Length: 116
Image (cartoon, rainbow, N blue to C red; front, top):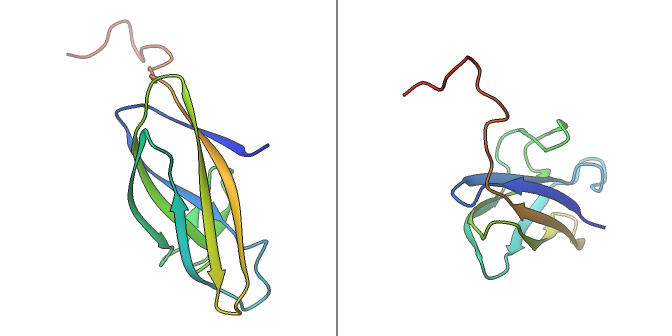
């Protein structure tokens, strides 16, 4: 079962797929592409040029993660996104993750009332 990440329909967010555990020592990503289903809008996609932290809080060094910007989606819809990559050693693979689009709210006001 793929990992499930959440976003609001109005949010534009970057999603990082950390691949450092999959790479051999000294190996780096050469290319990364993301297949995004109809309903979500794909923005920029790239191999990370600087360290990034994934949804689990793990930091990945430059050249070891794929990053994609996603926006849109319908409330309560799940979308499967496929990340495909090649490495500087000539290896290639792919992994899926799900994006669950939900209208996100503030769990509770920080004070007795919301600021205007």
